[in-house]
Structures are given as structure tokens and as C-alpha cells.
Length: 461
Ligand code: ADP
Image (cartoon, rainbow, N blue to C red):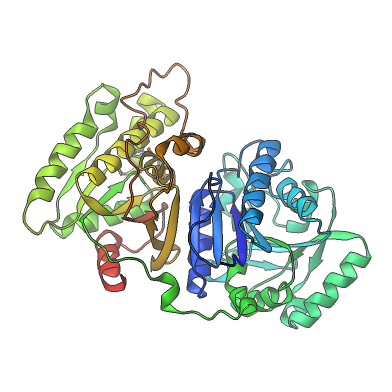
């Protein structure tokens, strides 16, 4: 079995986004949650190792990324992709620069192309400047990001501030001229001692040119966009075979902890279809009520009905309701409590026979995947832009191997919150396997996502 591409993603939903693009280009892909403890057991074209390293200390991000690289190398990967956010989320300390350079050192390569461009998602790079839709990055909402405020749209400057190597630019005239021109520019930059280059891209054609030019590159650092141009280098063409998952079976459920506008609309649309839903009240969790047990007892009744459709369990609420809860409980405590409860519910639903599960919310997905003991996911067909169905592959080893990975995803309750075992997801007794999962972050998906997802799965598997 030949692993063509080894990918390291700096966050969980970003990993899925990359895996989704690779599958759509025809590659067979597995996403792992953290660095696996054992070897790859399936024959696939690419593996995406999902880390949670975007905003941790640079030294820790480097250590985790190198561990992922070494595992991918041990599986035979020859080319590597460091997946970063399409809004280049980082600070002058990192982590894009330090991780890229550490990977370059480990791979013995003196040059890497860097581009977060993903025109289909409104992320374009022109003259080295990143645009989010029609706005410069520095004029977009990313300006106010609590952890990684992006106040400079010049990616050459942003990358230089966090890199030891000299940073250059492969500008649009070169990229538009095709792979030959890009390779010539790389040779020129290297001869001037440049080690990293931001690449412009304003269209998918640009990404295909870049992909072709990078056919022999050891490492690239990019958003998920650049992935669309890589399959061509391996002679792979888009095909439905790449996204084929085992047939769907079992009960269907949706667990939603996202309060983003799109998710709130999806909850309403689901309720309008007349299908059953159960609301989680964070204040009752804080009061010590066993809301997970209540929700699961309700779900057991619903699922026992003949030909039951999907059930929805949600904490999603309008911004003013969320703010009131956060005001009373604190933002971190409210988040941790709700995530813990939803994760226990997800685990309980699977124990009730749910084998098709949609989870809404990035952090919520992380918590649920951990509680389910899922170690790796085969990536299937796309439901809506950026959100594929996945299939939890049965962990081959005993559960003794799960805690180190799971713990990496465990949100530690803030000190003094009194959050006990009831609010933190227990490590699973048995891993969830044979489970179809769709993990949807915040603002993804159309209004009918919670019903259409199951229809898409029924059609495609
Ligand atoms: P998104 O992808 O939309 O950002 P996340 O799951 O990443 O969703 O984040 C939502 C956060 O809000 C989680 O920490 C979740 O536990 C928390 N949360 C969910 N519902 C509520 C609520 N009703 N009140 C307060 N916090 C909530």
C-alpha cells in the first residue's frame, strides 16, 4: 500500500475540510484524531492527522507536528501538507512559521510554498495580500479574533514575523503563467536565499497550476484549497469510488451544541418538519440535574417507535439567550458544561443503537468524537460545502490505547468551577465503530442540513 500524501492539520474541522477536498479530487482519505498509536491498516491515498495546535505554545505545536510527521513517514508518505486556516490564523510567535520550518528541517528541504487561498470559499491571495470575500483580511472580522487577531493582510509580512527563513512572493502573473513559470520563480527565489514563498491564487486554475508545479515538493503549507490541484500529480481523477462508505444502518440522531446563525436556522427547519427534538437547558446542568440521562430516556422512547426518523437534541440558542447563560455561568464554564453533557448524550445515543449521527459545532464535535472513542475516520461524500459524511473505523487495539489521544482533546474544566464527573465526558467503555458521523462546524450547511444529511447518506452508501 502506498500512501501518497501525508497531511498535518492544525485543527479538527480544518482537517475534515482538507480531507473533503482531497476526496472530491478522487483521493481515498482517512482522517485520524491526533497521532495514531498504531500503523495504518487501510490502503488509502492520503491521511490527514488532525491536531489541535493552532493556538497552543509554538514549541508544543512543533513537537506535536513532528510526531505527526514521523508517524506519516513511517506509513510511507513521500509528500507532506501542513494544513493551516484559510484566514492564516496565527500570531507573530506562530504557529504557522515555526511548524513549517521545523517540518522543513526534519524533511531536509530548503524551500516551501505557503498559501491559504481557497477561492471557492472566498479566500483569495493577490500580490501577497489575503482577501476574505471582498475585504482585505485586516478589514474582516478576523481583526477582532480573541486569540489570533489578524491586523495585517500582507502574508509576506505576517509570515516573515514568525519565520527565521527569508519570505518571498510568487505573484499572480507568475502563477497565471503556469507550472513552468512557477518552478522558474522558485529557482530564482532559492538562488536569492529565500526559503519560504507566499503564492498568489485567485481562481481554481491558479491552484491547479500551483499543484502541478509542486509535484516534487516535499512540503507545502496551505489552507485546504491547494489540495484540489494535487491529485493530478498522482494520475488520480475525481471519482465517486473515492467517497464510497459502507451502507448506512441503525437509528439516526442529531446533537447540536453550535449557536451559530446557520445552526439555529437548521434547528428551526428540523422542528418545522415535525420531527422530535429535545432542548438542553445549561442552567439546569449547572444546577446539578442529570440532563444527559433525561435526554437519553426521551431519545430511547422516540427511537423505539416504529420507523422512527432522526431525533434532535440541542443546546443551540439565540445569541441573547446564550449571553444570559454565559453571564450567569461564565463563558468557559457554560461551554465546558454543555459540551460535556452533549458528549455524554452522543455516547448514550450510540449505545441506544444510533449509527448515523450528525454533530453540529466545532468544539462540540471534538468533545463528541472523544467521548465516542473514535480514533480514525474514513471520509465519504459531501453533504454541503466542507462537510462530508465520515465513517468511524473500528479501533484495532484495546481501549487502553485511547486515553492518551482522547486526553489531548479533553477540555480541562477551569479551576474552581466545581465541574465534576457528571459534566465531563467519561472515557468510553467500548469504542463506537460502524458509525457514520457528520461533523458540522458553526456556519456550514443549508437550512435543511439536519434532514438532508440522512437523505444524502442513504443515496450514497
Ligand atoms: P460553532 O462551531 O458554532 O462555533 P462550537 O461547538 O465550536 O460551535 O461552540 C459552541 C460553544 O457554545 C460550545 O462550547 C458549546 O458548549 C457552547 N454552548 C452551546 N449551547 C450553549 C448555550 N445554550 N449557552 C451557552 N453556551 C452554549
